[in-house]
Image (tube, rainbow, N blue to C red; front, side):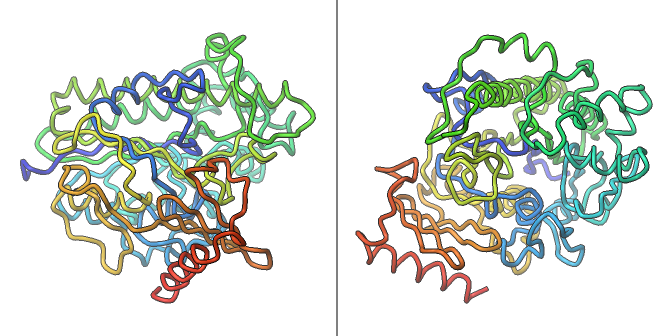
Amino acid sequence: MNKTQPNILFFLPDQHRADWLGDNPDLPLRTPNVDKLISRGMKFTHAFTPSPLCSPARACLATGRDYERCGVVDNGQNTPLSLPTYYQHLRNAGYAVATVGKLDLHKADFDWGLDGSHCLTEYGFTSGIDNEGKMDAISSYKNNGRSPRGPYMEFLKKANWVENHVRMYEENAGDCNFACVSDLPESAYCDNWVANNGIQCLKEFEKDKPWHLVVNFVGPHGPFDITESMNEKWSGVRMPPPVDNEQSDPEKVENRRRNYAAMIENIDSLMGKMIEEVKIRGELDNTILVFSSDHGEMLGDHNRWGKMTWHSPSSKIPLVVTGPGVQTGVSSKALISLHDLAATFLDMAGAQPLSDSDAMSFNRVLSGESMDHRGHVKCSLNEWKMIFDGRYKYVLTDHKPSLLFDLEKDPNERVNLCQKYPEVRRTLEEKLLQDLEIQ
């Protein structure tokens, strides 16, 4: 073992928007463990996903490639096995490389293996359990003659909870954003089950070998289903309304946002338990802790739910890093893309960098050697492409007028400045198109 190689514990919840953390004074959120990471490390306020959809975002992260080059256009494709992953490179550098939760690198298969091992070795993992996401669990079960295709539904089936869980989703068919209280016991709630799998992985890592564990929580992705105890903790808590929301049922909107907050608190608590396990192992001083997300969630802003849009609640992500060599108590405006973590982890590990990669290590920012990283970040999906330079966001959309926003003065993206600032629009469009031509 190379004693300079840090362990890496990477928390990657699904669809956690950047501003929904406990340090936001405008929201009644409870994230004490993330708050501790922020105080002991660095928070990046200008981090974005390369694509605001599960499979493309995670393909970009795994391969260190931009959306246009990751081989995944939407959730209908698998991350190509022909592309090298940072997981493989960490494994080649001597790491134990594990994953638990919703990995989404082969989402299109609708088959995770009942033990969650399908394709893990090929993508670069040495151990782990890759499980279904919320809606995929239900769809794969029903499309397979009410028989599990993945480890979570297999777990529920063996415990005689599967049909009740499926029935809850069937009662809300056609609504991917319903809010409800699940009748599952605490131990069977998916994020709790994922965390228990992660703790087991930590227990099984060899003490004389560096390790990397990515924990892919299924929450706070909708539907917004929570346990009874989570519901009790949040009963009666009032949530601020969404931005520019005209939907007809404000109570339904608030219930969704309240349950989203409850899922965030639950994930934070589970993170604390896993960090405590690292402490029990005596490895906390040599472990990099990272908290981020694959993309955000609109939560009713501009009458939208979910992701898949260039709006900041969808395209922006939380990013907190702490551990050996990382500055403490620093908030950074450096422009970071999610897939830069691939290059950063390999840099930390002294591993071979990914070939033909678009990712850039930001270790010099973490150490304090530099305050800047990228000159701009991009985010793309199908018919639109976005570029952000730290102040101005430009959106180029097929068959629609382009958009320009000043996020310093207009954080809610209400005023299109294309006509007012044509030079800014032209400069950003040229940079965006130049990047695409290079690829």
